[in-house]
Every structure is written in C-alpha cells, then in structure tokens.
Amino acid sequence: MSDAATPADAPWPTVAQPRRRVRLDFQHHSEVDAVFDPVRQDLSALAVLGRSMWLACDETTTIEQLTRTGGSRWSDHRTINLHDAFDLHGDESDEIDIEGLAIDDGWLWITGSHGLTRKKPKWHENDPSVAMSRLTEVKSNVARRVIGRLPLVNLGDGMWSPSLVGTEDGRRPASVRLKKGKTPLTKSLAKDIHLGRFMDIPCKENGFDIEGIAARGDRVLLGLRGPVLRGWAVILELRMKLTKSGHLKPRRIGPDGERYRKYFLDLEGLGIRDLQADGDDLLILAGPTMDLDGPVALMRWPGAWTTRVQKQSIVPYEKLQRVIDLPYGYGTDHAEGIALTERSDGGREVMVVFDSPGAARLVDGTAIRADLFAYD
Image 1 (spheres, helix red, strand yellow):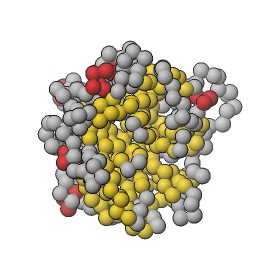
Image 2 (cartoon, helix red, strand yellow):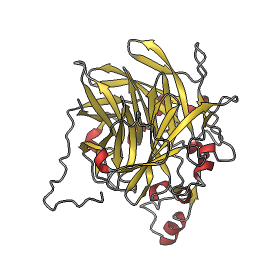
Image 3 (cartoon, helix red, strand yellow):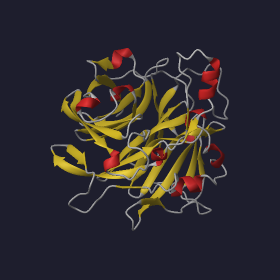
Image 4 (cartoon, helix red, strand yellow):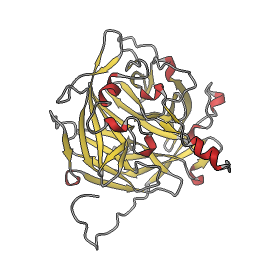
C-alpha cells in the first residue's frame, strides 16, 4: 500500500464491467501445424493493429494471429513459429513463455518472461515425498530470455503480417543474442543492487519476471511482475541498437554503465502484468506478483514517454492515475494482456484477454471471449 494513510471510510474500488465482449476464434493447433491445443487456455499477451491481432500462449514457441472478420469476431487463425525468425537455441519444443507483445512504427516486439520455474506438485500425487521432491526442481529455459522484433508488412485494408525473413525495404527480424544461456541484459542485471539477488528466484515466487513490453523507436520499456520491492513495482528502460551480426543489444544507459534504467512505481503492492503505449502516456495492467487471483487495475503513467530521466527514478502513487479496476475470478479469469482498439465511431476501448478462463468465456471447443472496456 501507499505510505499515506487510508481513511477508514474510504470506498472500496468499484470493479468495472465490460461494455461488450468479442469472440476470438482459434483453430486446433493440429490444424495449423503446431503443438499446443487449445491456445485459448493460456493466453499471456495481446497486441492489435487495425484489423490484425497477435496473441501469445505462454506454453508454446509461437504467436497467434487473428483477423477482424466482423464487428465482434476475430478469426482466420494462423500460427507463427518464432524459431523460424530467431536463434533461440535449445529444443524447438521448449516454451518461450512469451509474456509481452507491442507494436511500434511497423515492428512487432516480443519478450519472454526471462524467469526461472519451479515444478508444481500435481493434485493427483498423493505421496508427500514425490510432491516435496518436485518442489526442489528449478529449471532455467534459455529461450525465455528472448527480446526481439519482427517487421510488419502492410497488406492493405487494415491488415498486417509479420515477416520471418525480411521485407523489401530491408527490415529483418532481430533478437538479442543468447550465449551460454545469458544475454547482455541478464549479465548486467545479475550485478544489480536491487534486482541481482532475484535473478535466481523462480518467477512466481517474487523472482525476476518480465510480463509486459512497450516500445517507441529504440526505447523499450519492460514491466516486471516481480520482484516487487517493499510494494514498489519495477519498469526497465532499454535503448536498443542493431549490431553488425544482426542482433539487438541494449546500450549502456544506466548511471554506472548498466544496460538499462530503473523506474520504481508505487502500484500499492501489485506487480506489472502488461504495458500499452498511449500517446505520451503508458498504460499499466497491475496485478498480483505471486500466484494469486487479484486485485487487478489498469493504471496510467502520464508523460512516461516524454520524461527522459537520466538516472534512476521513483514514481509515487500520486503521480499515477487509476483508470479501471478490472474483474477477476477465483482460480479463473486472470487478466494477462491489454490493447487499445478503435470503435467504428472513432472512440477507443481497452481489450483485455484472460489466462485460466472461466467456463462462460469458452465457446465451441476452440473459441474464447475477450472483454472490451470503455476508455475514451
């Protein structure tokens, strides 16, 4: 919570209700030459441009593309395997744990969580020794440390397609270089006075965990679900450059030569679940850092893109705006991805997709309903 005292009679935030819902139609992955079915159960990221939508499932190495085919329907599902664009090392079946998608100036940006994972005891395992043994297993997956971008090709009529090999204007896919399980960013973070000790903690235990990305030019903002330090969430700013080898690499922009700058935001104890650029502002989907259900709120950081801070900075709660308190379920309906979409009358709405969807969201075996909330 904020340091300021909360009056005993302060009203509890009113949870917003969606203005309407849209249907997202996925095919079975077996029908689109992929391995995980159905993707709708584990949606983790969202980006929208015109009539094109991209989503990620945190159990795959792919992103999913849909096209708006009606006023409230997105379909024509195709799957894009990132192993065809990036050198991710490891086995092609290893999940990337994609947790952030963003669009800027003809590029689709992608980030993995970078987090470690701990085995979870399965509900049907009655032997306590087996359960305890699983809890000792911590895994590091190199592919989770990807940050990359794909060039988008304008197909006309509001439709776009990411290129996996390059475009006529010379733009090519690029990602950070993975070497011996590390990247320039993770090597720099390992020495960080605030974050270094969390790099070896599993992501769902307040360990290091990226769950949002936003971009503008060479500036990339990464939102951390964890760690949350004494109630303060973290955003990292990177300034990307393209190396001679064709890889992305963050420049040294920190006060002591770090490849990032840090911003600490008072989100009242919540971590960051997604980011969305909105003009000069930044929208932040805030939710629990641990494996909990809620609360969940959409926050705005005014002027985030115009305030070029040259050193570490903190952003108190009073400098942020609470836009919407979002609904959540108990064990279901965890808000994971946000995107701004345009209505036919020129107004805008916030689209939200959910992980662990409740039964009421699931339609016809492979489709799911996403929520649209009033914004403008």
